[in-house]
Length: 142
Image (cartoon, rainbow, N blue to C red; front, side):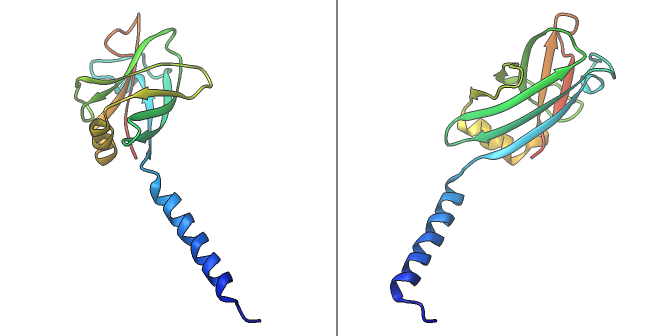
């Protein structure tokens, strides 16, 4: 069986299209496991936990994520903070808690690029009325 020149050309075009679509994505998956024991100064305790899973896209200036928590009561706020493990830092991105729904937050592209480059320098912090300084915390990982 001989391949016709047009078949080879089509195969080349298809391969190029797959390559370009794969490289066009500029995002990265980031995640964190949240625990009360990780909060600097103490949080909600060992029975509380949460999960954060996100797709960070610097070009789109968006952070689309799922944030689920348990054992903390009603959440009053949640944020992405700058700070290494054991250190508190400033808030960078406000997060919402929407059960079973993906939420997208707007964030500066440079901030998202920094989070992707050094995820361990950032953490997720969840606050409640009982724990206004933090009920749950988890360092990001890529």
